[in-house]
Image 1 (cartoon, rainbow, N blue to C red):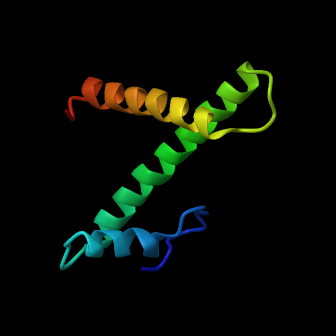
Image 2 (cartoon, one colour):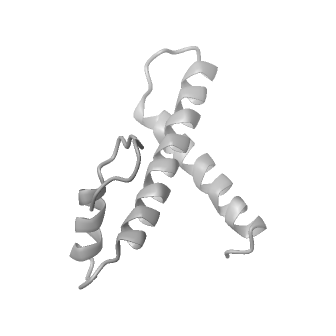
Length: 89
C-alpha cells in the first residue's frame, strides 16, 4: 500500500489494515483501509483537541485521563451529529 503524494500520517496504514484482517476481513481493499484510517486519525485529532480544551479550562498544562474521557464523549457526540446532518445515520 504505497502512499500517494506527500501526505503525512501520524498513524500508519498497516496497523489499520491488520485490524480489518484480524476482525475477519479476508480481503481488504486499499480504499477501505484509507477510509477507516481517515476516520481513526480525524477522530483521534478531535479527541486530542477537545482534551486540550478541557485541560486549559481546568487551568492545567497536563492532559489527564479524565480529560480524554470527557473529550471522547464530546467528540463522539459531535461526530454522530455530523453524520446525522449528512444523512449517513
